[in-house]
Length: 85
Image (cartoon, rainbow, N blue to C red):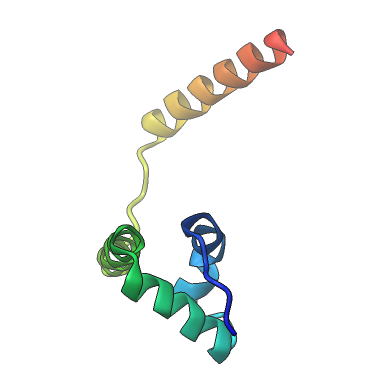
């Protein structure tokens, strides 16, 4: 008898499912959950659609000034976190 899969358990396997890195048996088990759970179905459907959009987009170069500002903001955030620890 196959045990039921919780949504939390499904989410831990989502990447492997989407990357088709699961065994056929596990994939079938995950697919059963998707078919029975409207919330997880929406997550999978939306994620797959998002992946298709991003796969069709060409990489863009980030302007140097934007990259510099982003790195400075990240460094400030990291320094703030270190100061709180």
